[in-house]
Amino acid sequence: MMDGLFAKNIIISVILPVWNPGPGIDRCIESLRSQTLKDIEMIFVDDRGTDDAMEKIRAAAAEDPRIRILENPENMGPGLSRNRGIEAARGEYILCVDPDDFIDHHFLEALYQYAAEKNLDIVKGSFVLDIPELGISEKSKLNREIQDRLAKGYPLYMVFKREHQSMLVRRKLILEQGIKYGDTRYSEDMYYLFLLGLSNASFGICDAPESYHLVYRKDSLTRTYSDVRLFDRLKVFRTCLELLLKRDHDTYTKKYIIYQVLFFLRLHAYIRRFPGQKESAKLFLQELREQVEHCPLLDNDIKKNLVLRGLVKYGENIEKRPFAAPFVKPGRKDYLDIHLRRLAFAVRHPNEIPYLTKDFLKPVYRKIHHFSCNVTVLKKR
Image 1: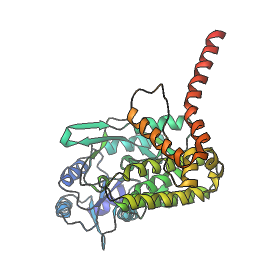
Image 2 (image 1 turned 180 degrees about the vertical axis):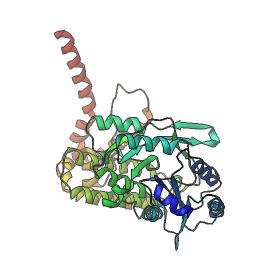
Image 3 (image 1 turned 120 degrees about the horizontal axis):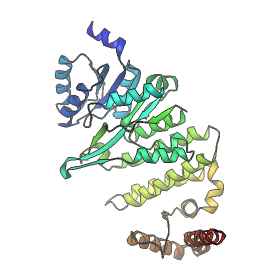
Image 4 (image 1 turned 180 degrees about the horizontal axis):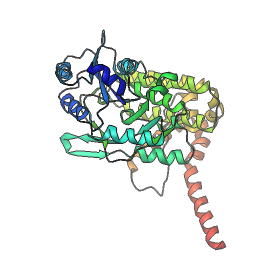
């Protein structure tokens, strides 16, 4: 009877995939049960972990009828577990929380009040990174970045990069437009955010002080490196690209693709430094190269963009960074590393020297042009 009462009045369904969250599950449960917004349900999806988290959840469920438990037949990963929770949810809005994190007591009420007042499909709340070992609690700057980019006309799929846990989403939108998390073990949230960005939903940012707290754990899945994680991210990008190419193209479509490719090249430059990862990095670069080469929107950019040109024509990872010499002050080691790698590339491929020179001089020309424009304006005044 009590369960039926809640079923009629549920405002927010909180979805939590549970797989070995550690002792953080205690604080997570407490933060949800003590929310000032009481008309919620908490759906814990048991993903067959090996710690005692589910025992604690079942004990809490015996005291709180708002807690529901779904059991996976086998370990399915966080994405598919969240999808199961969303399918079973009954609330007007959905919020996905990681069971080793926690939220401030007024967080759900603040987000819902903002969503109801503005009649929004998606509301992004404040996000805080907590590192208990170092005593650090740092507020994310992503909300401000999103606001700045939206003001410049960027579409939502280009600004929804991360922090899906602090996004309150209308369940009707999710069901009607088939929005879901990816089936990969890693980067499943990137697919979810991309689909949200394509949905043309109404969106707003709630800058209330109440926040979602991501608790840093060294042994967390998102903090550990593996080949699976690397190639899962590339798989998600490939799926998103296929969806994007089926739509009407605009200038931002190409920007999104190039941004992602440059991100993967920086990621490759990072992972190839790990011991024993030489072959994986090589295979990763090869798959990325094929993806870029067969993208119809990048034909002209491959000829003009030095990074894409080097990747497709030679399979080289020439990481692009904003050359600012001799104006640069910080990061001299990074710039020196780029110089040396481009010099090595020029030695192996002398026909590319004109392109390297032109690319190197671009920021210098921009600086000179900017200075000339300012001088002209001063003269007119």
